[in-house]
Length: 246
Image 1 (spheres, helix red, strand yellow):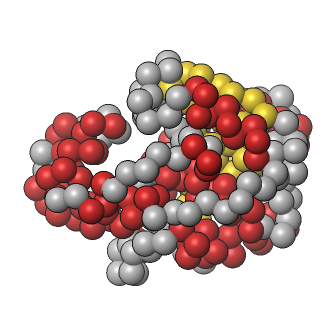
Image 2 (tube, helix red, strand yellow):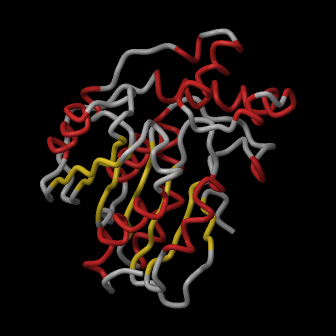
Image 3 (cartoon, helix red, strand yellow):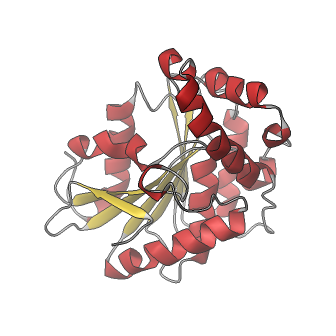
């Protein structure tokens, strides 16, 4: 078993594999429902970071290099078996980009969501804030139901994970600009205060394989209500490796 990857609805003979990286505080199950919108030739894999759900006994990771090194090692066998498209949202976009840089067999495409390009990342220190401030950040970004935000046990369990993930994001020192051979697509919400269109377009400086920007209605977690549209856009990204869509 690969501790890092969860395959939802494995395909018999997939022509391309879509590997999805969660946001800060998130886990693999965030992407569980996406398989229902995918055609048979696309197999969905979601990354499970240590310290959550079935990996709760493992130490949390607090630095990008360790996160990307270990994730790349887990994903490398998939990349050797056929085309892989990497997708990451928010923190997950940065992790996906670093994994793409590390893979000996480069991904077929990189799709980054809700995240400025590495040289446009904003300087923040939320991981050093008190618990109330950190927890309020969850509510501000809009990715969590109010019922969950008001749940004291969930808060106690989630805060250490959230703090560690923010530490990964906020201590990350991007390397000198490197242009990947794989194409890059950037997805953003048109009301996302965490990334401007200009900051997202700067991802074009990190590829030699072509760049496209897709703007969806919504805020930082636009991809929740727009799940079907987001997956359809990803299917179009996967289309060169077999099939026209669901």
